[in-house]
Image (cartoon, rainbow, N blue to C red; front, side, top):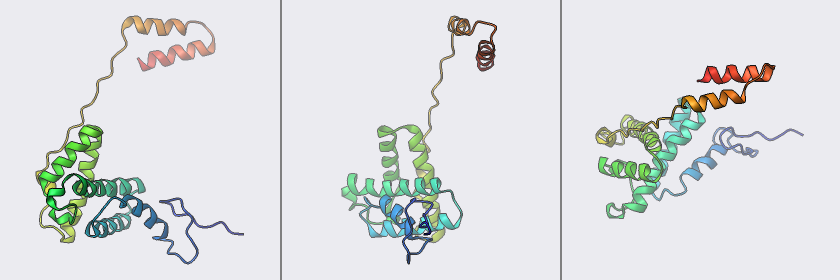
Length: 184
């Protein structure tokens, strides 16, 4: 008995008679689009994912890109009811993306905000290429800076104590001393 084909994106078995190219993928995209309230967003995000697959982008890249855009759609629907919800990506302006970006940075981190920024840049760039929007709202959104955290350097006393633990003439002790000295 043969084993069922598995979709590389969802790891789900592709059912006989289903399209092996899109059958399993649809499940994963549908999971990402579960919170998207607008059909216009959902259609464009499916098309964008198809375009990314055609461009042979890695699975993780496609997932993160579509996730960021779907999160923006959800954010507009949940937190910006005054604009009528998340009805159409062509109605997104830079103020809305900036508010989304600020929320991501506050709730997650600056690094996550930078990743969402890069993904949304690609999404709106694709919308411009496809003729869905005339101009990307990302042109006016400031790029977040991810602050690198400085790692403390060991003091001379801490280094001496580590090397004391490695004292000896055996293979393990000499190896450990060499590793510690190399790292420091």
